[in-house]
Image (tube, rainbow, N blue to C red):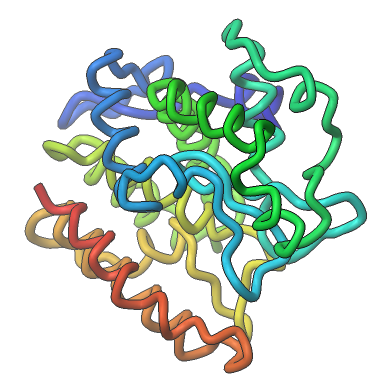
Length: 260
């Protein structure tokens, strides 16, 4: 994925009223840290322990400020794995990783019980130290994912819908504070293009939020309201055994932060 991101990243933030693309998202170190800190608060209340989580009922841990998924060996699921790409990205930036993490080809904890039993181990503390010291880099990684999202979403959309998706994407991107909600949501719930990330045929990613936006008023407010509707619909369609309803209040609080 990292090679794909670098190869396709080119399309994002344009000056208001212009139709030409820039050479990609450009954010300062201060902006990267600010957005990264907000994503960290969204995912795990800004806690250090929250950087290494394995939720009940899930088959994978969620790591870092964006709760990037890492599947154990032989385990796969409907949700997109992203932690291995973050690991590759950090290495490419010259960040020193623990030797065990460099060597790991899959999540070394086979299940949640093993993960929680190892929670205060030296290995886990090394992982939290790495993740807490690279907040800005993780935010830049999130930005790279966003850069590659628009071409994917347009390719996955019916031709009559593409202009609306593109227009709403740039409406939000060019609004004051608009980069944060786009970066956060795509790393929170994905691009919305994967056929495996569906309940009863309906997705819940960035594509679905952009498609459902009102075309008037504040772009960030329209994005936030659409995200709330999309996530509520996901809960309604989710398998009851997953108990996803418990997450909705937190999800709603999260998308409410998208309005400056």
